[in-house]
Length: 158
Image 1: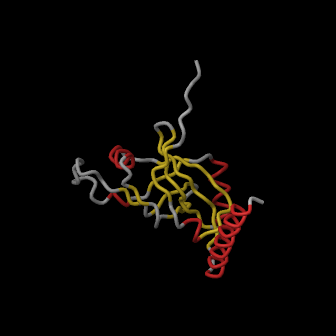
Image 2 (image 1 turned 30 degrees about the vertical axis):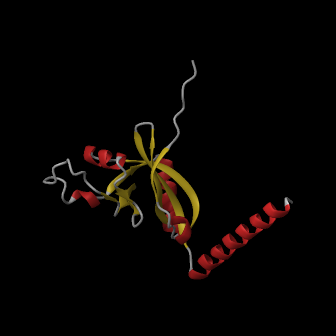
Image 3 (image 1 turned 180 degrees about the vertical axis):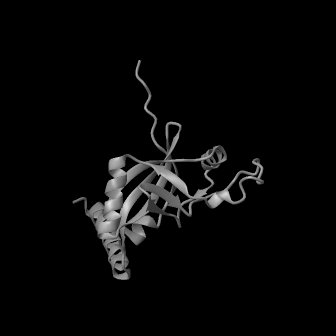
């Protein structure tokens, strides 16, 4: 009997991450969440577009990630916690590598996407360097040229 392998179910993607940053290396990390946060993420009520990751005392934390509480949960205990700092779960080697890269090369660590792997909530993060305005312009030009080239090649069947 063959086991059915489930694919990743992507919840949200930071669309501006590749536009604003050169991403050098990707990592996959787990997130420490409360029960109500898991339910909210299952319904897609998470925003990672303005969040970032910081290294503190040999641990990585996700800052400014907004998870909206559900209407069915009582808001008495959770009013301040929708924007709390969440610990990321990585291997010690990966945490040390990321910390060294941040100190040595002044990299920024940004979240790229949040997804489900089986019943676990995971996050893709990337070591990145910020783009300048001229880099963004050049990327737009390259994208337009690539699109035009594909149109021409489709027309003439090269």
